[in-house]
Amino acid sequence: MSSRKKYEIYVAVHRSEPLDYQKYRHAALYFKPVGGGATMYFHVVGAALDFELQKRTSYENSATLVRLIPVGVTKNAITAEQLTSLMRNTPIKNDDYEFNCQAWVQKTLEGLAAAGHITNEEYAKGVDDMIEATMDGTDDP
Image (tube, rainbow, N blue to C red; front, top):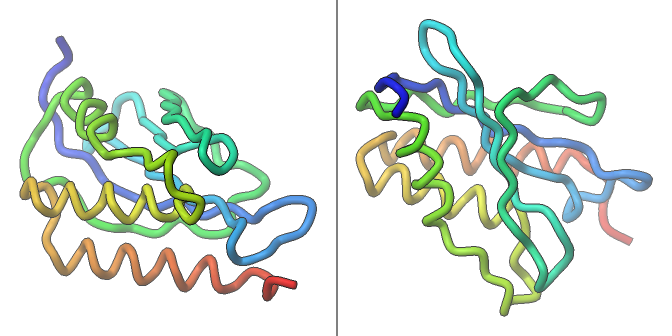
């Protein structure tokens, strides 16, 4: 089992390709251990009604990254396994055509706030800033 650490939390927003429409901008959560160590990047991938959670243990800034939004630092030290479990506990709503990666990030941040890992203010600002970054994309046709 890994040691307990605090993590810096970021929302990563990526432009969609080939057309950068607002509703197709990709959102994910990026965790960087305070003091160094392996980073973790979580996102849902797939198409409507067929999303699945994906974890990357070494994330490099991608050419599609448009904004890395700081959310806060976990209030309690947790293990990488506990953090991964928190990500897996956020429901992926494959019975809802409106569900997407942005909705998953919002629900996951809500869960982190409910568990006391971030404040309600950090949750709200993280979601607001994610929405703002997605709105920087092109208006949908």
